[in-house]
Length: 193
Image 1 (cartoon, rainbow, N blue to C red):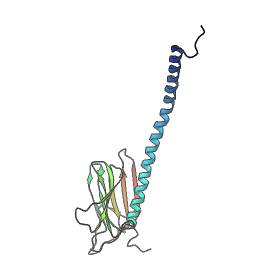
Image 2 (cartoon, helix red, strand yellow; image 1 turned 90 degrees about the vertical axis):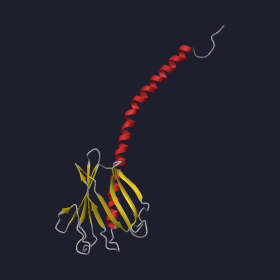
Image 3 (spheres, helix red, strand yellow; image 1 turned 180 degrees about the horizontal axis):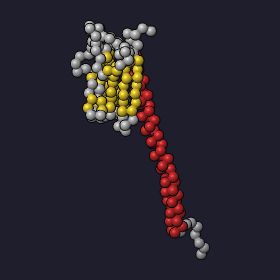
Image 4 (cartoon, rainbow, N blue to C red; image 1 turned 120 degrees about the vertical axis):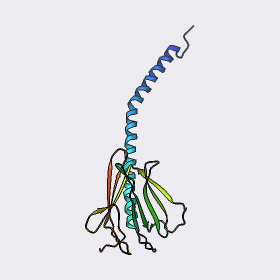
């Protein structure tokens, strides 16, 4: 009787062992590349978020309007605790995406450690829903105004009966890793061109 064609059990087990070794070596070679890709993707998302934040701040500050009732269109609520600042920037904005004026707030949501942009209609009733957008992880948010003599202030005066426009706004952001970012945005409202 001749030998039947096919593989013996030993040959099949050897083939499985060799295949397992090839898969293990391939995984060991590819895994570090995948981790590097994840890290690169996280950094890219962080940078995209910061660029989006800078664009959003410039857009809002370019459309700041003096409301009808004479309230200040720009206000800072200072909150400096320890080494971190938890300021709140409140703006009255003529948002191109919405009709009428909007009240826009930039603040740190301390429960999540994220910078938030909250927008709602300026004359909306108390308790009206706002549109909240997260702008990234932040541990410190510090806002200052520049006056006509190029001095920076954390509080801004409204003047006698009329609002005095600041020349610029400086915003310091610090994330949880200690990286800092500064936005310096000139305000052209109320200025001679």
